[in-house]
Length: 228
Image (cartoon, rainbow, N blue to C red; front, side):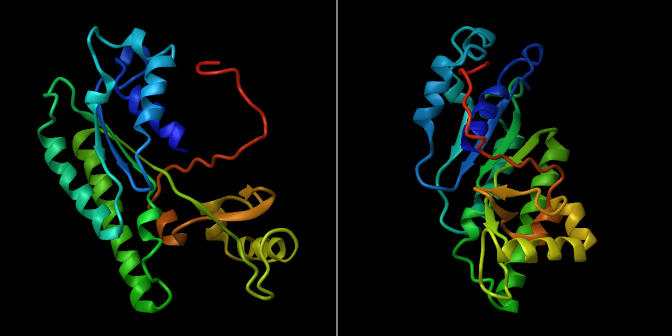
C-alpha cells in the first residue's frame, strides 16, 4: 500500500499531458518512519518520473510531509492544519495541492478504546469528522484524497476461531444475513488474506465514509520492474 502511495505522490506532480495533476501533494504518514528513502529511489529509477518533470524540478520539494502521529487527535489536528497549505500553497498558485494521502487511516485509532458505548461513540464521531473534512477539502480545492487501511480477521464469535474452518462459516453467515454488508464489502469470501476471510478495519461506519475501495493482495508473482 505504501509503495502505491509513494508513486501517487510523484504522479500528482506530473503534467496532465503525462497523466498527472500538475500539482503538489500532502503526505500524512502514521506508521513508523516515513519512507522518504524509498521515495528517493523511485524518483531515481522510475522511467516515467524525471523525463516528464520540468528541468530543475525536485519532487521532494512538492511533497509536504506530516510526520508520524500517535493518536486520533493528532491525526485530526494534522488534517485541520492542512487548510493553510491548501489555501496558500508553498509553491504558489501555479502548483496547488492536488492530492492528500493518509497512510494509514486506521493506525492512529489502534489505541482508542472502543470496547464500550462511550468509546465507540468517540471513535465514530472522530471518523465522521475526518471524513467530512477530507470531502470538504476535495470539493473546495479540486483535489484527490487517498487513504490506506488495514484488514482484520473475520472472527467466528461462536467458537473463538479465526481463519480457515469456523470463521468461514460465520463470515458467510454475516454477509448473507445483512444485505447492506454485501453492498459495502462485496460478496462473502471476496476479501481474503493468506487464505483467511478478512474485513476492512474501522468497521461499518468507516465503510460508509468511503467513496471508492481498492483491495490489494499479494499474488505470489513478481513483475519486471517499474513501468513493466
